[in-house]
Image 1 (cartoon, rainbow over the protein chains, first blue to last red):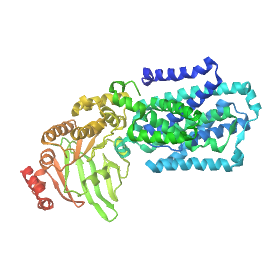
Image 2: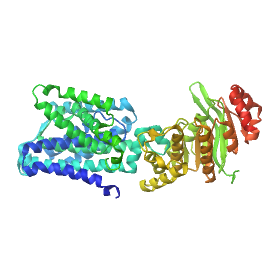
Image 3: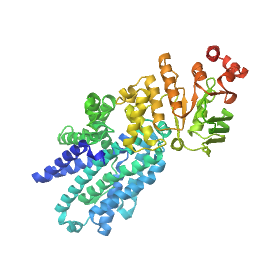
Image 4: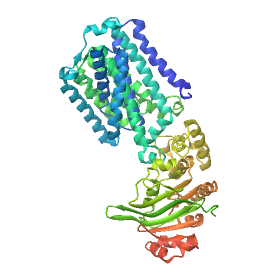
Length: 322
Length: 255
């Protein structure tokens, strides 16, 4: 495939992969925990970017798929002792299937209506899991420690989950790049720019959008499965946490929507910033305020985000920096 | 001028109603392969509505549309595109944040031939050369001026390798020099064997270019024929006298 012969994507993958090796080489558990979260955010931001940055549909409640994947996989692991990677993939596939059926009606909405509908969907699923006893209701579900025995104990399981998250992050970034560079991706960007004109040019927007939504649901769902597997506990609150979704949007806007690198840069910068703010005693409660102000500033002054800004300023880089 | 006589597009008794407004009233027309067919009429006559009905943007309230022998009434625009219909918009609609080349590649990728990306890019380069935008292909479409955006519309439509091309006022807003250039492009397209259905307000252009002309007024067809026949038609003169300037231009152009 010609797309994958581009050096750009390999550089990105090597950088992300290299950074992911650091905690293993230094044998630092706290660094590993940081990286685990960072990679998860990269996955979340990149997935949102596929539907929002490429296609122009702001999926505010995208975190719903993180929760859904988490719940499905957790249920399989707890009740049927399914191996965690298999459970995560099934969770991803299940979330994609749900996205497919939700997408058919909801993607008919445009602009703010679509964004609001995705929030509604997230809240609806949160209520469903809060009130449905099969999945533990409001208190959620937790593992017996014996679940981790199959993976050589909780410590080892954490390590395995980390490796899986690294692989998932690389696959997500790779997919994001392949989509961007494909005919499919070109169709998505045409929809983003002018849906009615794109139809006249021969694009069937409904089909492309539903497919995109389905793809963009898969990665957060698998990430959710890995996160809650390592966590050992899943509750409706943290699984369908709307503000995490909003933070992911800030990351995409900060890094540069519609670019492959943007969400990665955005996730890393935002997470570093948040880490700094949370540890600072006076600012720790204000980190969401700062996120809001940041989003406002980006939307007002640097609409294209960091990567988009660089691309605009240095046209020579456009060919290399996606 | 038409090389063959086979009919490529037929509109049969098409009406379109928007609430209380009858935008098209039992319109009948047929376009032959290889000709340039002009549609004229005062503002609000229903010309663009007719295009939208042919193109599938909305279905007609009554009547049938047939394209190359197939009943295509009510098909979606993207279905029409696959059957070999392309169009330009009266108000240009570039995909602003994409480059000129990407814009045209979209046309080639999703048009009649549904080309894979790499072939589509080659077609895009050829077409951009053809309409004279080759030097600007890496620019963002939003950075083009109006004349260039009109050419971009044209390039995008051509990249789809259409059988029938609908041109909606491609000359509007251009200066005389740009008009002359654009007319050259339109003739070249016809010489390639693409049938053209065009809406145009610039009378001397439409009269010189078209093989046949069709006149709409208040959604109804008031005349059809060669440019000569149409320009001498009393109803046409009457329809245009509402706007003396246009009538004047009309008469001069036909003379």
